[in-house]
Amino acid sequence: MKNVAPLRYDVIFKKAFGEPEIFTAFIRDLLDIKLEIDVVEKDKAYDPPIGSVKTKFDLYAEDKKNRVIIDMQHVRFSDHYHRFLHYHCAALLAQVVKSKNYCPELKVYTIVILTSGDKHKTDVSTIDFDPKNRKGEPLGEIYHQVIYICPKYIQDDTPKKYRQWLEMIEDSLDEQVDESHYSIPEIQDILNIIEKDQVTPEERARMFEEYNKAEYENNTFKKGELKGKKDGIKEGELKNKKETARNLKKQAVLTEEQIASATGLSVDELRAL
Image (cartoon, rainbow, N blue to C red; front, side):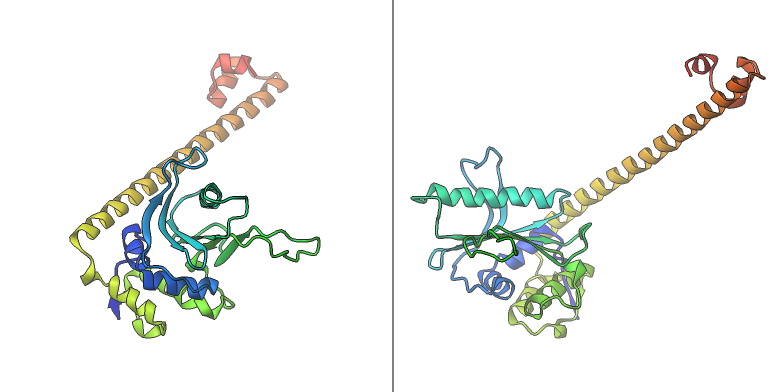
C-alpha cells in the first residue's frame, strides 16, 4: 500500500502526466495512438490569443512526425463541456493559421479529466467532429475529438485497455493506493512519482493553496444555497399570508385592522392586494 498525493490537485496531476513516457502510455491505451514526443508542455498558451479569449492547456504535446496534437485538461469547472470545446476549437484554428488550406494534416484531441465528478455520471463522453450520414455512419473525413473522462463513474463495461488508468486516478483521491492492483508499468511509475515522500515543499505549498481555494468556494456556495433557501421560505410565507388575507377580505366579516393582526400584514399591504 502506497501513501500518495491525490491526483485531484493540479500540481500533482501535471507532475505525473507531464512525464512524456507516462503521457504517451496513457494516450496509447486511451486512443490507440502511438505518440513520438520528447516533451510535454505545461500551461501552454497561444500568443496572441485565438478567438478573442485567452486559452491555457494544462498539458500539451505535438507529435510532428505522426501529425497529432494532444492537449489534456484537469478541471473542476461547472462549464467544462463548453469551455473545453472552445479550447479545442482554438487549437484547431491555430493549425489553420500555419496551413495552406482548411485541411491541416494534424489531428487534434482534447482530453478532459474530471476528478470531481459530473452531473451526467458517465465514465467517458466524446464530442466527435466527423460528419455522419442519415444512418449515423461516420464519413471518415474529420478525426478531431474532445473526450471527457470521469473516473468516479467507472462502469462494468468500461474498456479494459484504459480501465486501470481511470481506477488509479480515482484510487489516488483517498491518498492510499494498493499498487499490486495495477499491471501497467507506467501506472507504477505514476504511483512512485506521486508518493507523498516525493512531494517537494513547493508542490505541497501549491496543494495547500488549491485546497484552501476549493474550500472557500465550497463554503461560499453553501452560504449562498442556505440564503436562497431562507429567502424562498420567507417568500412562501408571505405568499400564504397574502392568500389568507384575500380570502378573509372576500368574506367581509373582519375589519382591515383585524385581518392585518391575524395575518401579520400591514394595512397598506392589505389594501394593495
